[in-house]
Structure formats: structure tokens, C-alpha cells
Length: 192
Image (cartoon, rainbow, N blue to C red; front, side):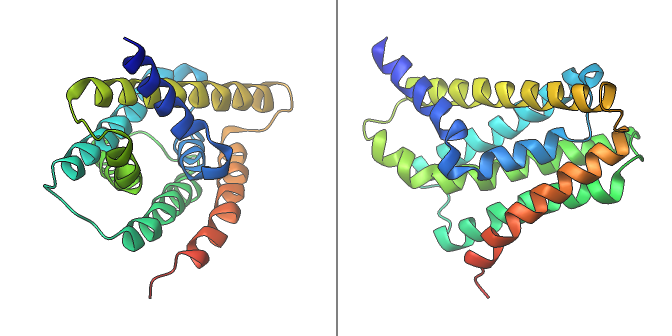
């Protein structure tokens, strides 16, 4: 059972590591257009991201897929940039079920990309293989993502109710901050 807690803790630390804040930036961009009243939809998105993340660890761990780390390090900030730009261009215009289905697919795909970014390290720490470490790690990721989601939703509630930011302005400001933080990552990992 101590192995389970070890991998759960590693999953928590993987997302909540301030030195590797790309995961947090992606989650902030993903959460920004939502309010507390739509927390269930947001948790579905976050769970789909975890599913994609975990699938890429499985695919890499069993050598089904191998992706260049340079490409992954480039694509991770691209996913963050796309999520933030989606918020900027879609601010104030949400809703159709067609867009939700596409958003679910894109979120899984982005989870795959982010998971491949961690796959080599995960293979190194999980040299014995097996399902239990992967399940515990995925639960740790999911738990840490839920923490970030609720922090963002609470901050959105505070700014929108106390400081009278409207939902559109909140999405524009936070997404612009995320873009400002991700541009140096893009420049640093540019592969062309």
C-alpha cells in the first residue's frame, strides 16, 4: 500500500510543481471560461485530460508510441496557447453541444501530448511496470487538477461577484496573462 501512496504523491507533485508550471497554465486556460455553476462540465473536461495523460504514459511505457521529446516540449506550450486563444476568441460565446464534443476530443488529445512530456521520467521511476503505480499516479494527477480547478473557480467567483468583473472580461484577462506566460516557453522550445 505504501507504493500506492508514493505514486499518488508523485502524481500530485507532477501537477502542483511550481517549477514545471505548464500543467497549471493549461488548467487555468481550460477553467477560465467556466463558473462555479458549471463545475460538473469542467470536472468532465479535467478527467478527460487525465485520461489522455494516462493513455500516453501507457502507450510510451509499452513502447507502442515513441515521440521526440523536442516535439513534445514544443507542443505543450502550443496546447496552452491554443486553449487560451480559444478563450479569447470565444469569450462571451459559449454553448452548442457540437462545440462541447469537439472540446472533449481536443482535451483528450492535449492530455496525450502533456502525458508524453512526462513519459520518460515515469518509465524511469516505474521500472517494474504494473497497473497499480499507473492508477495511483493518475489519481494523484486527477486530485491535483481538481484542487487547481476549484482554486480557479473560487477566484473567478470572487472577481466576478465582489470586484464586478463580468465573465467575458475575466476570460480575456486571465487568458491574456496565460498567453503572456506561455510565449517565453514557445520561444525557448521553438523547433523550426
